[in-house]
Length: 105
Picture 1 (tube, rainbow, N blue to C red):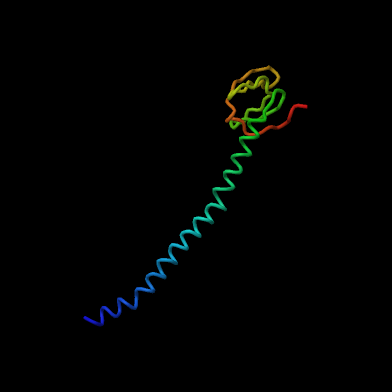
Picture 2 (cartoon, rainbow, N blue to C red):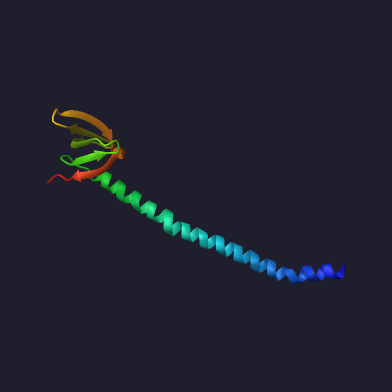
């Protein structure tokens, strides 16, 4: 029985070191996740929001559905587009803008 307590006493420092090592690895994994995935995604989201907020009358834009059109009116969250030669007008929301193809001069 005494031998069992000696083994337990000898294993306690290893258990503490192992626990600290595990916690350290989890913290390191969390930092890697933050710097490689979450932070770049937030940066890209800020750039996309800035692009969508910079849409002005006269810009040629492409929507997420692939529609290309000339911006006629920009309101708070809505944009009125004019597409193709037959002057079809479509109202979309700002979040549906994929890219600005040509800025107005």
